Length: 329
Ligand code: NDP
Image 1: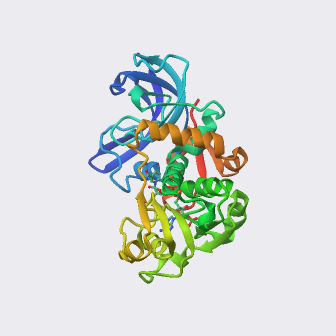
Image 2: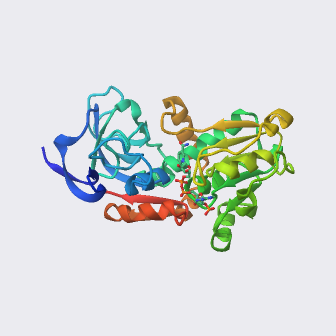
Image 3: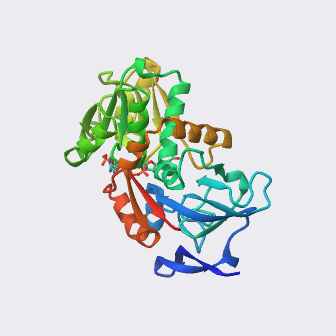
């Protein structure tokens, strides 16, 4: 057995350390599929793992990275054979199971999704967990019966990863998209390019508001949480819904029941990590069909594996625009 390049987080008396290393293949964890990883990506959660700012990593040493695209090298799983192109999102990789910032990964075949035929591995990672979560949110809103005819859709944290994909997906589906951002000065043009019809300053939603406000939107994809989520609920039209998927602004929810009991507003929780396989397959096939490749390209920057460590603090500081692809091979 040989070694492969990997970003490795170790824990010592002085806290955690993270570095690009040669990792011994015998250290890979159990799994019935071994994948040659070609691309990964940087999500908010990866930033938390790389910096140790929140207890994302629960096993040491850990290879961080919650998403990968790659090619099956060996498999004893009935669904996969060497040469298959696959995508993995979540399932605890980069948290409890050795993850994606490495040339090699060994995982359960049940965790894998086939790379959609019309996406390259790089595009799949430009989507990544952030983009697939935006699609899970859109699917939840649609299952509730909402469509562009119901009214505008709000996206919070719009210039970030989940937000950028959400803006592009909603706009492509015909929604009037209101993009909330703290970076209107720099990113308004970018967001309009993705399809936003209106840009609002996130401070409008960031201060404690009334239990019920003016009815401004029928649907929300929220990546921010906290007061922003409370205000998004309070300003939702009668019968509308909010899909909550993030906590970039805080984990709390200082809201009242007024929108639920007086306007019939629904709040959907979105989890990408343990989402069941049929839902993942539905999300990926909708992404492959509906996400404009030009919009995806505009929102994506690319870094090599040895630079991803430095990008961790950047994403936590809210300075990352759109999506970051990590090239590995
Ligand atoms: P990004 O950092 O790319 O995007 C987050 C955006 O939120 C920022 O770009 C910024 O947008 C906004 N933001 C950041 N800090 C604050 C703040 N203090 N107050 C208000 N807005 C803020 O991260 P991702 O898109 O990767 O993830 C977004 C969130 O979704 C994270 O909390 C992440 O943990 C969560 N998530 C959850 C998943 C799930 O399964 N439920 C899956 C994927 C992500 P702007 O500059 O436009 O204001």
